[in-house]
Amino acid sequence: MLSPLVSVSIPPPSATQHPYNRHAMTLAHALPILDLGPVRPTYAQGPRSLDAVRLLRISVTDRCNFRCVYCMPEDGVPFTEQNDLLSADDILDVARAAAEVGVTHFKVTGGEPTVRHDLIDIVRGLAALGPQDLSLTTNGVLLDKLARPLREAGLDRLTFSWDTMRPDRFARIARGAGRDGERALSQLRRGIDAALDAGFDRLKINVVVIGGVNDDEVADFARLTVDQPFTVRFIEYMPLGDATLIDLAGEDAALGSPYTVDNHDVRLAIEAELGPMRPVDRTSEAGVGPANVFRLPGAVGKIGFISAMSQPFCETCNRLRLTATGELRACLFEGGEVSVLPSLRNITDRDARTADLIDRMRQCVALKPDVHSQRGNRAMSQLGG
Ligand code: SAM
Ligand code: SF4
Image (cartoon, rainbow, N blue to C red; front, side, top):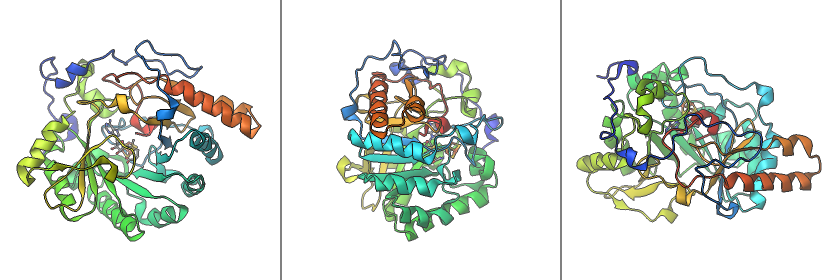
């Protein structure tokens, strides 16, 4: 059995130990948040074109009922006051402008999007814009009540985050409302059942693989795809913000966290137990995400690998992010932020506001770096994943 997470032993980081060093770029530890206007970081070499953007990831809140070790510190998380969050109308204004310039996919995320009280209104408004794909990512514990209303509001797809099948580990990874691991796990399973009952049929399951914590469960998760039509996606842990895993690894690990497991090794571990997988045509997979997708022999579902650390996919990045407080964000790791608040608060004419929002999107996309650095300056819960 694992020792408590806080005492998981960490190998001392060294240049030879971390294969990610081969991607080492300028470190982004001290990046300023660029909220005064578009300032191009010196490491950005774009320009990127807004024409390439297909997906807007919309964070509707920075709050969460969990405190996952890879996402947040356990205590003292500074959440935004309710009044400082974008309203549902604000979010729809930005989404409408994005749709005008060819964004076809919206992803609702957070923090935990299901803790926002007007979530259903937001989803209904986004669906009314007629996107090709409208999806939401959730930790799943409130989904048994929300799956059907979300479906009725026009949501197309759901992604569940699920990192371990073991209650004791669940409690140590998710913390917060996940602290009763047994209960949280059964709520999550009920949420998945409720999603299937409500007619969501292309469920994705995100597993963040954490070295020394849940990496011995990857074959168990892969096995789910044998008789379930899920896409189980293994995500390399990314060192972002001030999550507990950042503290545990220490600043010396800046060039590659000991908790990040190369997806190549995850694939080998799965194949050793379940046989060789073969690649799946990416266009058969819902969404426009960065996963490389495979199938086990005879399996109904699929397996995806999101390898932002070992194989950065910045070259094909097709997304923009909108934070719950109104910043467009070019990249998960780098600064590259442009506020939409001046458009939303100062421009009353709707067409002029839309034009200004589009201009800000264009400025933001140009801030994308060629390749992201090794350490992001804001938490995933603030950026929306
Ligand atoms: N609360 C929702 C959830 O957990 O699904 C949505 C927001 S969460 C920030 C979006 C996704 O990012 C989740 O699948 C989560 O596991 C993943 N994530 C969070 N922090 C991460 C990190 N440091 N590295 C890799 N994935 C991370
Ligand atoms: Fe909450 Fe999702 Fe972050 Fe976990 S990953 S703390 S569920 S926002």
